Length: 460
Image 1 (tube, one colour):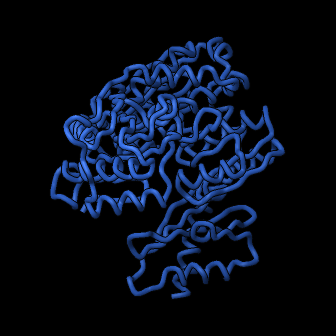
Image 2 (tube, rainbow, N blue to C red):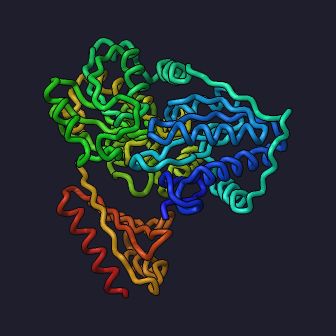
Image 3 (cartoon, rainbow, N blue to C red):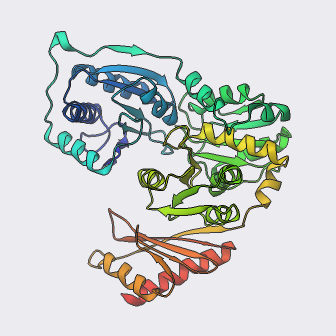
């Protein structure tokens, strides 16, 4: 079974059986549910929704199904075609639309696709709203429009231009400082829409782009998750081209990874750290990440006499805490940059522009910039348990065991020691505790994870 329904949308593998995979019937049912929920919530029928998709192979088919279904409900559709997640998020309020749907399975392989749901602010709907949409889909409680009341359909081809101009207009993006450096940058866009959008931005910033896998045909040349083990080609090309650095984005362009001039990974965790360093250096404020993100962001915030807070894991949770604390920068350790002066969504394009400004003003190489940040290493392990074991009870015992340390129970159990931390989170679908650690060496991070597994087993 490869169909996953959650509060943020629906995702699955293309083909197969209804309710087991993401079939055309599942797409229609879920699009109907979201459109109906919006109509009920806004108490009107003639809504406008913005639709955009990444370049994966099934995108055109899924897009046709979604747009036609919404028209069948009497909803007007503005189709951006090939787009990025942050571009759709920006265009919803830009066009005064009532919501949006992004057709992307993010970093999942090419056989996957998904519908991600946005409210009128261009932000992901919350848990309560998502549950209501799921209930409507389950009950198939839809009322389609009669022939004279079908929704209109139009396309837009200026969304990237609008998105990029809004970035260039930001006071903290110094276009002239970047242009003066004439950076040479290698881009790996995993053959999706970043191959269109990022070169457009870099051209406006006076940079030379060396394109690697930038044809938006959905044929991912490697695993699309921007992790070190998948990025050997760009690391080699940066060195070969004597480039200043490399940029890597995932298929929907909301995760940003960097490669230094020596072909070494900058570290996904450190994309946010570097951008926050630049912003907090110029304005005291609050920085936010989630509980499983690097301690380096907290350390950098302290050096600028700024505050740092951690949310539960998940973009919606990060955004909620950013709003509560009026944060000036936030995001997740997977390379997701959220800059609220532009919008409340992870955005690789604004991340690139802010990073380039920081790099230009510091007058350093990328490796020199990275060397100036605290060095941390992360570990990820899990312990598989038998179904009869009470996982919540185990986590409570771990909380009590380490009550003299700094402990957070916002999302599972996170234990902050003086020189490292561990975050224990239970799976929602199977008897597993996931164990995230961070320390000042990889060996120490891995050893901490093993120690936690041993401690958990001692309680069973």
